[in-house]
Image (cartoon, rainbow, N blue to C red; front, side, top):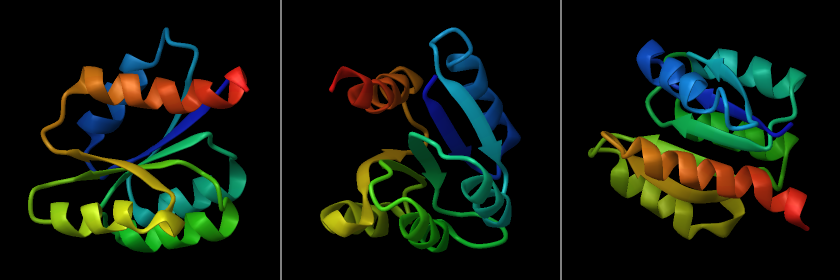
Length: 126
């Protein structure tokens, strides 16, 4: 079963993704801070990382950098508010970052689900 790691300091966002993927064949692991995200990354092997840019205990770019060390090919979707949007867009432009998309908050949950499913199921289709 593909695994999604959702990293966001807002419990409602984490819970939303757990609910959205409950019947989609995707296991969801959540972390509420940068430190929790690093612990999860060291103990799990997610297929997709959904990462908020503003986090307590290490910002999203720090988590992204550390995730890249552990999993060089892990697809990453950044979640961001409007202020961080330009930085997130720059990360997408840099291919080495592994960022495949940016979801600007508030985002369309159906679009987020489609994107995650596409990324989770792509390796299975090969």
